[in-house]
Length: 471
Image (tube, rainbow, N blue to C red):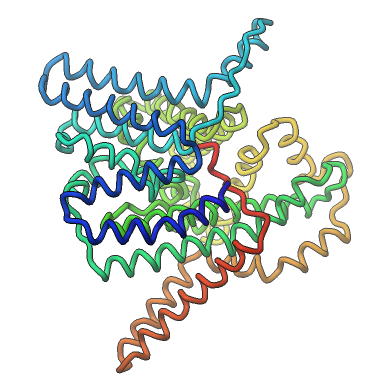
């Protein structure tokens, strides 16, 4: 799935960019809309009608909100839009989950639909909802052109894996955006960085986790289990941040400036800070459209904690129609509530490395809840990690894994910090003092090497999972 999509993108992107750049500005949105629908149809032709329907629904609701501004009809229109969007998301993503649990609770026998999940439906549903809400709140102007709105909804650079682009952040860019060679070059570099993260880092360490995950629980040792979930912690970060970088890079090639989605989350000193750095677009979406409308922290401590739990319940459920995601969301909701209540002031007094160990330890436990949809398997995996049932500390297989992936882990640790970024800035500043083409060749040769290695790996590798397919 991912390999064919990336191959299609490599073949599809040049011709799209060619038509896009030679077209007059008034036709650029049409070109981008057609390209987005073709890209999405490559994976799921039928579901392009779902996206078109969402675009039409929100376009009509936007017109109603504008026409009946500051009246009850406008409020009803935004509520109607939210209900329709969430109804579509619930039907395709959560229907079978609810049916399964109803059957278990009431001993009924309702049939599941087993519908394939539309790729990226959680992302573009939140985007379409942000349109009507932002228009209703007067935070962004209405789109009078249905083509312009459909372009926003279907925007293929970030369609299938985020970041979630809220309407208010790119409302002006939909109609008018800066397109030039410098921005295009910046976009190519950012795309290559994202591709390298996904292909060279996430996929490589993902193979280790996949092998450990597929090992019988009874055969795992304590250190092997820890090594496996640490590998997954790196895999999901470089996989998802890699997709976000590719999306931001593609956006720049078409003149868009998407907001950052990751800011080195594994250097955080608290769980609260981690969630300000991880999947930033999702966190800000829930904050602006759920937490604050519920009252935020303005209605007393009791209401604040209730609002936090609602947000984290929904955050977990957004990630997947499975109980493990709900428990995962509530797990972090509890940790953030505890930090907010009293723990943060004590954490700030601790030595920095101790705070970091605290964060990484709790995150690793959280990733166990996240990755194992079968809760019983996740529970047994945790038991192995903490040495229950007289599990061995390590064996020769662990030594082999550690020896084989030692250099990879070292690279992952360095790459998950700002070290490379800071060194890159220092090198650039020194190269600016050089004359001629030396600076250009030195800097850009790195990107050519990364692109070559990533492309070679894609052609040769059979392991190339899409972790965020279910979202």
